[in-house]
Length: 408
Ligand SMILES: [Zn+2]
Image (cartoon, rainbow, N blue to C red; front, side, top):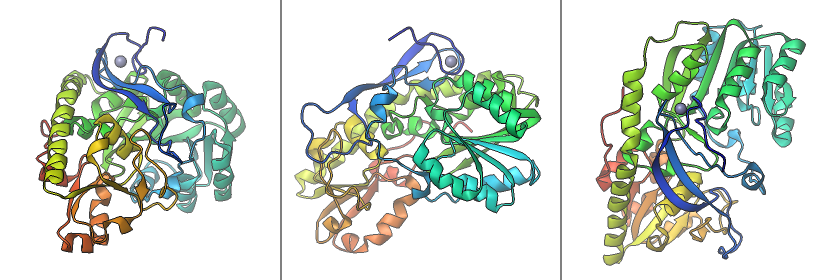
């Protein structure tokens, strides 16, 4: 590995925060229990001493990461917060203004913008299969990775954009400063930038390692994300949060708008939370495994519910393989497969029927109550549900508490 530099500020001094060791790819389910040849890669999160951004300095090479990729398209997850984002856009630009979405995926948000009356909608996305879906929305699609060069081509063909939007994409991008230059080239003077990224504050406060994921190289808090945008010339005008996928951060910024005089205090607070992450993670693991062991001792089965990327990161990161008895997922495509690393076989919800034990929910917190409601018979039979994903309020049932109140 060459000497790393920070994805956001370019500085070269880092502190190691959390090291989960060699970890299999979270989306690579197995047809058979894993043999010795299963791919693993170090999962280590570092903190930039300069700007405070938490990041993966040694990511998995894309050709390995996206080989045999089970395409995970946006439309699979309900996103009620899209309506709020659309109304925010409507308050800033007109229906005929040009909008470019970077990483438009299967076109879910392109379709929402078109339905909302925006006529000049453009998507940029490298995935050919996803783009076949997107074109049905009527949006113009540029197939390829976003770059300054592609930005120049879009502007010469369609004119400058009034708004650039990107949702759950920026956390994947190593060259953040290159991204900012490309966006700068796309936007008209005074143009808007609306970016949604996962909020990493609450996973760090709770010590929840399930939010580390090989595909995400950047782990933002409000302070580190706004600091990045402001350094690149975008003045932040609004920040919103949504209970989506464990917590999403939406930042609206404007080219040339005034930037905050100093974010130093906020950045130092963000760094302090990051420095406490490892200790919190150890405490989280200890409380969780104590419960799993106590159940075993009492003759109760330990169920894990949900086998998404977060569940796999949690099981492998905390090395829980031997303490879990059965694993459940509602997605029929996954049933019968084995979880990466842990080799636990995935079953349907029917496994809970007539079982006596505790079920640990490794689903995004906003889905906890829906799952519990579906399995009332398990509860009637003496089963208990716990959540193991931050920021679920049910974490306190395992005595897992945040290190401090939120930074806001
Ligand atoms: Zn930095």
